[in-house]
Image (cartoon, rainbow over all chains, first blue to last red; front, top):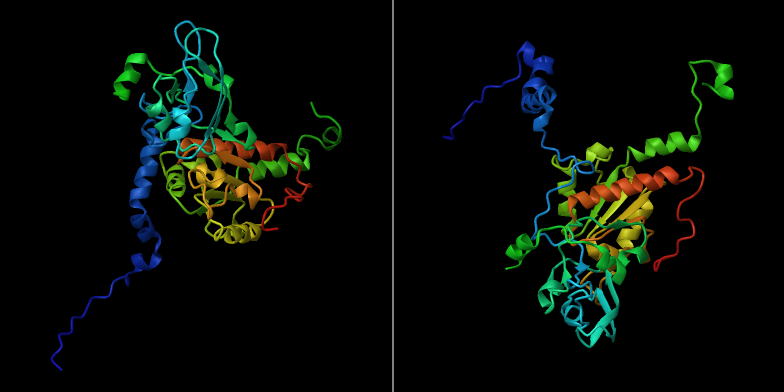
Length: 174
Length: 170
């Protein structure tokens, strides 16, 4: 048979290699390097210290919803049902009522958003002709231990302030 | 100042309540198991990786065997075909166990409002914490973990959890 036989030199026979300890340290060299670097100077850690240090949220980040108001404090929403119709997960539930402040004919008497159904796609914000619903509260984490409290109503939506400067928000919206 | 039994035993003995010491241990050694069926599992990986580092809360030992875990993270859409599997895996976990429904699909079905998707896993297994989002940020996973730890703090060791739960598969 004319097959070429290549003899590979067997490694791992020396005393130091049999000790294993040195080889483990060699193998863990990168890990150890990181460990010592972080022990010497822990200001350059990769970890974000979340509950203590909040993350940076940009003005284009779609956070929890809010309903906006006119300058005189009246609700911008005119209950046109555009957001509810456009919502892919059917998480918005609006009930329209009569309006008496002269802005228009209708206003919502009930505006519920089921945050567990919501997929934060922002279609409601795009659909809104009055700029009444926005997702610029900067609230990025909504956690609850029951499903009922995740349905937020009109008061909660109106109470949340926008987290960003108006100019910055418009830059992102364009 | 030592009171009661501690006063008689001197400085070397501390007394505590069983609930306090066991719950302290349970809080900071949650072993999560990810039931990942969709993109929320990817977001959990981000929470477990070095930037968000879930081990700061003592929950870094991610197990892929339910028998070694006590915190189940349901990350993703659960179809009716998947529901018996979810229930079986939940039952394979040893007591005490906690469940987090992560994201819109697991908590309520999300956009999948159709014949084949379970409209919220709380119809199948008891859920302790819901996370909103599609998918939620890794920070929200950490928030849920903190909420679970707060729940554990108030629980009693001697009481069976979710004994009278009845789901659609029971």
